[in-house]
Image (cartoon, rainbow, N blue to C red; front, side):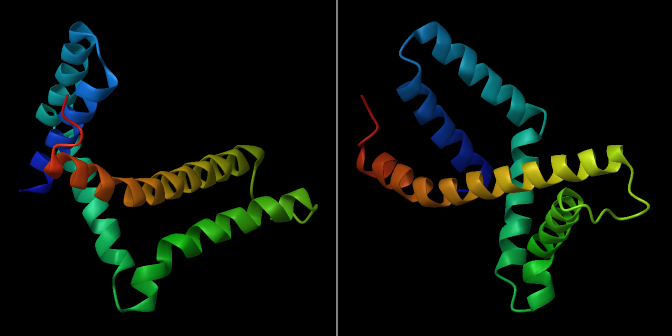
Length: 132
């Protein structure tokens, strides 16, 4: 099964489990299909595959450039808290760095959670455990 079809299948199963009301199910399924038609699901799946391939790379720089970048941004923020501000960074730039770090940490937490949960969901789908 291709990754996009798998995402749609899992999404459909989760929608049926999370939305007991048929009207809510239809609205959520429509939103999922619209995302697929606009290419958003394929784009997200492709991005996830790129990140996964980078993380599994044998070359240390390819595998670690994203964490190194996030640590650098985080270090700039922490340094500012201690009064060691970089001389050329404005308040707006620090706020942007903070947004990037928040997004990166959120993405890491979500990806680790998904990484742990998805195998259980797919096993349950295969065994019929999520069907009503």
